Every structure is written in C-alpha cells, then in structure tokens.
Image (cartoon, rainbow, N blue to C red; front, side, top):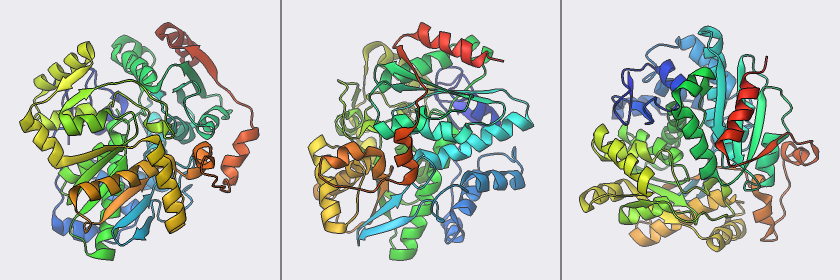
Length: 469
C-alpha cells in the first residue's frame, strides 16, 4: 500500500510517511494509490467482531506492516481504554427504520475522539520509535481541538497548537480546550471564523520550509489516518444492523461540515461496504448541499448556527472526493482547485453531477428545524439529540420524504453529547443533567491567547512555542 497526492506531484509514500506529512507537499491531500476491496465472505468473517478487533482488521489493509501487529493492538487498546461504553460506538434503535450510532463516548464527548485518541497514541509511538519531533498544528470548529489536545496532552516529545474561531464555538467546546494546563498545549483564539483558521493552517503547511523547520504534523482530517480511523465505525454499524435486521443495504445520515466524516463513509463504500445512500447533513452553511443539488461548489456567506462544528464554508476533504469523481485525473483536480482558489467556485457538468447524486443526498437544515427535531425526538422517543445530530435526523426525514424510501434502514450519527451544546438545548426549555466531567469545566481557569486573523501573529506565536526549550 502506497499513498499519493490528489494533485499528482507526491507519490509512493508509506503509511508512516503519510501520517507525518499530513497535507501533501504539493498542496493536495494524500490518498491510497489503490483502495483494498473487502469481499462479502470477509464481511461475514468480520461479523461479530469487537470494535477493537474490527479496527485491527481494517488498518492491517493499509499499514504495510510498518507497525507490528502486537504494537498496533496495544495502540488500539490504549486508544479506547478511556471510552465510557464497552462497545466504543454503541448502536441505539429509535424505531424499526432508524438507528443512532453514538459516537460521543470518548473523553471529550464528541465523535472526533474515535479517531484522535488513536492518532495521539500513534504520534507518541512514532515519536519514540523513529525519533521524530511531533509538533501538531490544527484548526477546529469546536470538537477537533478538544479531542486532539486530549489525545496528546502531557505526552513526551509532542507539542500541540490549536486555532479556534474566537467566540464562535460552544462554551463547553471552548473550555475543553482552554482549561488544559499541560505545557505542551497552546490555544490560539482567532478573531475570525473557522474557514479563516483553516486557511491559515493550510497556508503554513504549504510553506515547506516553515513546515520542515518546525516539524509540523496534522490532526485535522487532511490527515488520511483520521479518515481511515473513522471508516471503522461505518463497518461496525453496518455489521450490527445486518445482524439485527438482516438488511442487505443501509443508509447513513452524517452531520458534515469539513466533508471528512462523510468521506470516511465513501471510502468504506469503495472498500465494498454495501451502503445504499450517504446522506450529507449540513446546517445553513450549506455549500455541500448546494454542490450535490446543482454541481456548483461555491462558498457563501458565513452563518453562526446552533450547530457550530458545521459552521464551515470550505470543506477540506472535498478535494479527496473530487479526485475520485474525476477518475483520479490529478491534473484536472489541480486545475479545479486552482480555479476554486482564484474564483471561489467550481462547477461540474451534468454527467458528473449524476454520479455525485448517485453517491450522495444532501440537506441543509435551518436553525428552527434543528431545534424542532430536538424537541420532537425528546417528546416522541425520550431521546435527546445534540444540534448536529438533530441536523442528521432532520436530513434522514427529508430524504425519506423526498425519495419515498421508508423501508431502508438508516443509521444516523450522533456526533456529540447534548451536554456540549446546552445553550441550544435550553432554548427548548429542556433541562439536562451535565456529566460531571463537563460541569467541572465551568469553574476552571482558562489558558488561551486571543489574536487577530493575521498570519504574522500566528507565526510569531508558533516560533516561540515550538522553539521553546
């Protein structure tokens, strides 16, 4: 298994090289040069495996034995030892056609823990085994930052700096990042939105001399290891659904802002998982819905919503999908991305749009509809949704109504615990008991540096932080 860039100027990289490179040196995203296909017989063999055992099976297809199996097994065990549920990602029935996959049982109560607890362990392993310097730099719309920090805080040989948009994440998200006291953690609160933070990160990673000088490593979903780790729970959910319902195909409804979580599903489907439809759930920042419906990928006006982790107008992982949509033509991908950078827009033809619509459905959920879904499911099923999960549930309902398909079982991803977004929940006069880990955050001292949306300010902070003895 080798990895290459979506833009064609980086190829033949191994698994560890791919982990460390993060963003490809030509500005593209790294992808496997061939996607391994899993047979029906193999899926049958995987049925009934624990989450950790399934993780090992899937990763063994991608790592070229660069990590010995015993070492990988220990990394996986350590990664999930702090999850609050023995199944890691338990599947909960809502009704006969709808199940919720709870992805929030990790340390920071969000789906990002599933990949980032592993990534933190993996970075620590690589730092020790290969004597690599690990300086992590990332941007977050809320959940990635907390999960990444939790994955590496206090770990020897690793430093992490996370940018988040100032006052545009939830109170709990902010405090999960900024109440950490470990000296290897730096939080930068940027006066801008998530797209500003993400743009700055990509610019710094594209500066190869700066990247090499400071040993920059990525935790955002630009890192393929994040994508691969997230694909595991698609397999896990499908195998459970098949065992419970005998369903041959399953739909997945996935809250998505940066296209990473949904692309993990696309990867699983390309590996042979019989997914019927991938439903992209967005909020009012609906660039992905617009693309799936019209073929136009164009950033619009940024809107703050009740689901801030999806308040994103430029989806980093879109380029990975574009690579496969364009039949792996790296020159075309590079041309499209150059066009997007210069004009802020990409448009595909009707033939390609038909392919997109065969892969995905997409729905942008308004703030009011998001709250309505939370209220409805609390009243009807006594199940409390967080606002992002509510967008996924609302999109499932819209797809069912639009397609007339009320027989195919759907798995909706619960991407965060509702306690992380109590501000929105309280608008419905719903009172929830906050987990003690979250309630305790509200009294802790915060550690963050508020800065302007300016590259020079960030560079100055990074020079000092990464250069510290």
